[in-house]
Length: 379
Image (tube, rainbow, N blue to C red; front, top):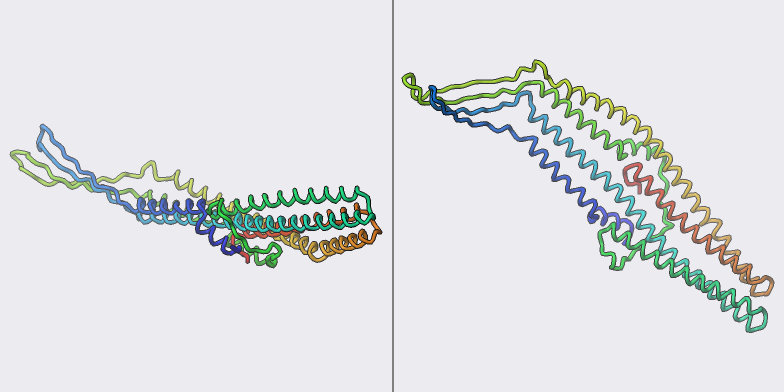
């Protein structure tokens, strides 16, 4: 499984994401509810006075396009849910990318620990050979054995850490944590750095906070339109029939109409509240634009720094320490230096290799963080 396969699998199988997508059904139900018309009311009256019986049907009529405006609000609320799902998708993408490279890094660390164990074993064999030849004391053999035991323990720890990282990735992919997970990826395949202007411009369109606030603004604008339409009163038509009113008539029609007079309550409170929310959202968007630019720049420079650090280890620090170890081995084998210098060179190389792997993983994580801040894939 490579990175692209892991990302695709997480987008389709992750249970948290699948649960969030079920909210779409709630939005569809909200649209259905918003489009419903008010029900008519049927009334039957029986009285001692004439007419003795009567029926009335109360038919409410909505004016001012209220139904269409309710539907517009419901559709914008549906769009808000889509934005929430999209934001969660980006979060799952970041977590999956980090978990994938954490598993790759754990594999590399296990391989590194195995190489360190093999190196310690080779050194012990070399010390044993020199001891048997009478060139060194038994103390060197004991020290070499201690280094082998330490390297063996480190290897076992790294192997367990690899299992832990693979289980974390399997959980994000909704796969069985007991099934083996085959991962194919290279930690040192770092994505090329994008341009700051490019990612900043992209963030203005796709940043999660900006998208959420912009959608909230659109929804509130529709709510304001609906609140204004509520100022137009509805009409209630009341057609009916009266029965049994002797001697005037046996049955006769009747009708009525009622309208609420917006004398005191004209929806001023709802309109003022909606206007206040709109002003707040506009200011929030301006603030988030500035914050998004700063966050993108910070994430961009952090990734550039981590990338430079990894390159320094790859090009200079790691090769130099490998050369130092080779020189220390040759020097010890020829009897020019003692075992402690060789062991120190081995430890230094192992530490440098671990730090190099850590720098690669940190660079991959930094790129994932940059992607999430921007709100769009960058590779």
